[in-house]
Image 1 (spheres, rainbow, N blue to C red):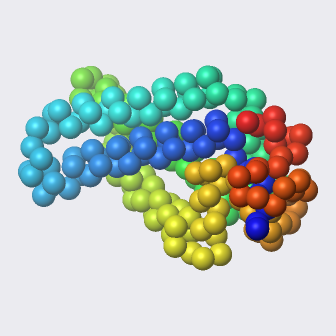
Image 2: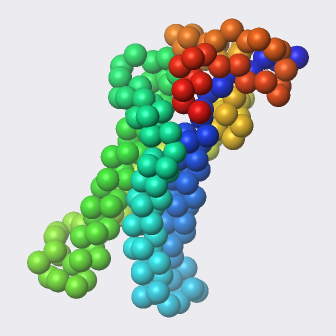
Length: 204
């Protein structure tokens, strides 16, 4: 039987899935506003715009709540690890993906807020804000497509999805894909057990 080790804590997984849920919600409402066919089909454009805007604010608020109410220290350690060049639990591709997603999130919030304010006050109507917001959508879709391919389809990497759903990955996979990660020795080679090191235990 395979031995499994802990990869992501409950707070890390919650942060990821809250972020994913709001992203898909905003993508759906945004596409209704962006595509004329969908906009005509759904109708009620002012309502969709309000749902999209307030969903964006809810997105940031929900992530902040997860960070505040969950294991904030563990999330902060993960953030610091993503920012460093040393790749242990995360490879360079995962770090680049995280950095791009963070940058896109910030730009989405800023441009979206400017668009909302610009409809109420002409002083906030900056040139190319709409173009920036739409370009970010294309970039986010490209990142999402690549992320889904690696997490769900690509045989060599899709086992990583287990880490974000159940919190654990096989010890063999961890050592093969993250050789610099100090994988803790497994105590019981059973699927129901997730052996952890002292560092990983602090993340739960």
